[in-house]
Image (cartoon, rainbow, N blue to C red):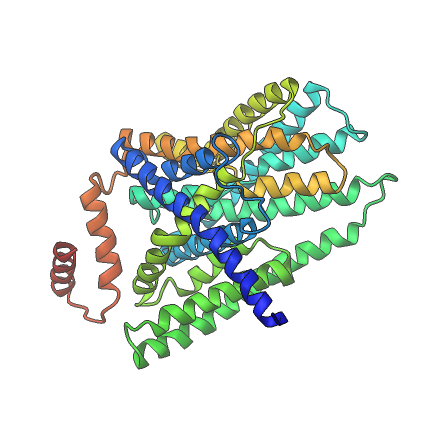
Length: 450
């Protein structure tokens, strides 16, 4: 057997190994998603629960750390979150996003510094000490400042409020507070060396990279918008446009992470915003959503549960984890909710903003891993963050559902009305006919056909 044949055989074995885990994930995620929907909860709750049941927390049927297929599942999950954020960007109302920009920035600041102070204080009160107590506490606070918006995005999409004022505020604030969190993390790591002499220049380099990223995104977005308008005229409503848009999304996500040190999901969301004003934006979003619903979405949300492992936790860490989880969720609700209220939002909308920002996920785990790798905190702190990720990921969609059931958007009370309004915005923009009656008839036809 020559080398190429051996490589082919190994690839087939790896493909064989991943098929059963994927089958288990799809079946259980879909089943529990339907159960969640029957219970009037977002399907994402069921998909996360499927990962918890299949992972090491319960039955351990799917091991995401298995070298033969674990990396493949994690890669599929990463592609899933990139596509989810790209879809969220495509569905963004750019005018509304610009209008809530200052509010989102204020909400993001509160969403970083209130949890930062709360996490630092809780760690200090519990008396943990790994040799550099102040910076250890500060790093735990930085973990609490991170927001994982992916689950909130899916929940808002299912509820029909992603393009609302609250939805745009949550999306914008989550992107901004992740960037602020990266800068804070850099400060903590660079200042926490043994001599207390951090490389301050690297902090300013990161700030410069962030500014440069957004400057390039704005300029490139302007060029792409006109380039794709030309492509729309040449090949209107064809698969060519979604394919090129998806290719650019992957490229820009890669560039954001590789060249600017910004999370790839930020690059994906920025790419989506670049295309959101196109007439074919809804057509692109429709094609992306099919891939998400059928394949990448269930794997990503199940992976949140698959990555969780609560075995081997010390009792003191369990108590600390429970307190930390409560404080982390409350700090986001209080900080972001109060900031939204000060910006003129209603009490109910302010609470929705706070709840939408309280979920933690891959960003919190990445920051924790960075702190462990840098030697700032002990490896046992990983056990304290995992319950936060699980509980906040499950609680956020449920609480959003409850809040919108109690106080729906004033402009659209019923789910059917929300769907009709979104279709009117979607299909009406795909045609240049300025006759309002014609657009209204088109929406009615499209709604009935679906």
